[in-house]
Length: 230
Image (cartoon, rainbow, N blue to C red):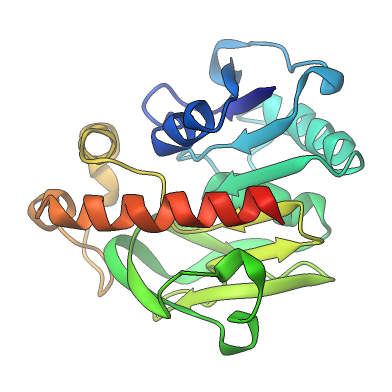
């Protein structure tokens, strides 16, 4: 079985997605789109991960591979294979599913609580997931909920933090897959984003304490187990 990741920048890798996939028996492969890598043959992919990145889904002229990526995602969604999109990946899924992606009222960067949608709590994908918990965020855009998708969670700054589409497509605006080293890499490469704003934290808050990462890892692994098994 192959878990294939579409990676958009060198400093945003699969992190906990990769470790979960390996522990679940998948071989992990990547297409580094920013390097010009080709997309995999759809038949070779059992589970697709679409990672984050600082670009916007509507910047096709600046990043020509975005247009090709949307077409690839559209094709793989038709196979009903499992697909997870994180941050930019969730926005790409939303666009392919016919929704609008646009600038959010607030830029959201840091550790902020997310709450499960009460209507979604009985869903199997949320089994064992706390009603609210601290998640990591790094985004300026948001999206409309795709038609036929189920809204899963929200934060104070951003209503659309996650959706489930027909049990085989999961979009997460927030980051549950991160680690302390991966956030360190984000801070190093995207420090220009850390300007003012009511939902933007500084490097000190982003990286400490380490216990936040451990708690989020447990939630992420439970979430992935649930998603894989529904």
